[in-house]
Length: 340
Image: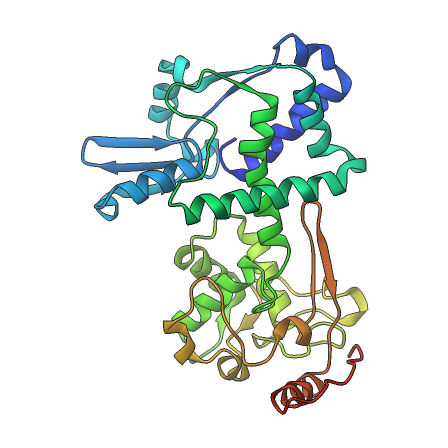
């Protein structure tokens, strides 16, 4: 269980045991077997990293890191048989025991998973984000759980140093940005379309493959194809301005777009208006976000459920949004918007 999703699954298994058989937790019954999430190789030299912050620290301290071949290990299936044998030949490094250290462990697991502790999770994540920002400003690297000498971890440390990475990533990818109204998956689709600058239509399944290749997309292609379909839908109640064109059957209002044809049969391309909304001249000064000329988060709305937080913003009339922006520029009060 390598990446943040793996950490979440690990946490769910620990919570299942903690809820049903707490004695097993207190008797240090639970152990884990860790495998690398990233490997950097150059010739016979190889470095394994067991968390993304550990890899980021190495990259920041290694000037020639670009000369290494970097490979991301999404799951156990990424490792070869040879690598699997290497892992099991070094049990001391890969086998980590969970050590129960008292009520703090119980409280941490309860806070992370209890339905009654939503507000506590908000405080937990807010404090973590503030600490992360402070460390970055001081030039310090993020804390991570597994260093070369780690042989055992407490459940509290697991929650506060590993599971928190998933919870934060869950919010980052589930809740759209107010700046461009996009989730990371949608932004990667847009990035790929801008880069490819296709003059003709492309099959949705084919575009999904290109996005995975060009934008370091580590999740399933099925969810990526669904993202592309959603960006192109133009039936009443979907997008007020669809960023991609729906060429084929992209679903109807009748089933909320779920009745779209297979991605192998439908085509899409960048909507000409999209390039006008996201000017190419801005890209020289933008990093990781786009900056549309009107707030797309209000145009097409936003919906997402993360950890401790969720969002739902309805769609509004683009013409009314533009009128209000002009009022603000003139120093006038904006008029209330009505869902559209």
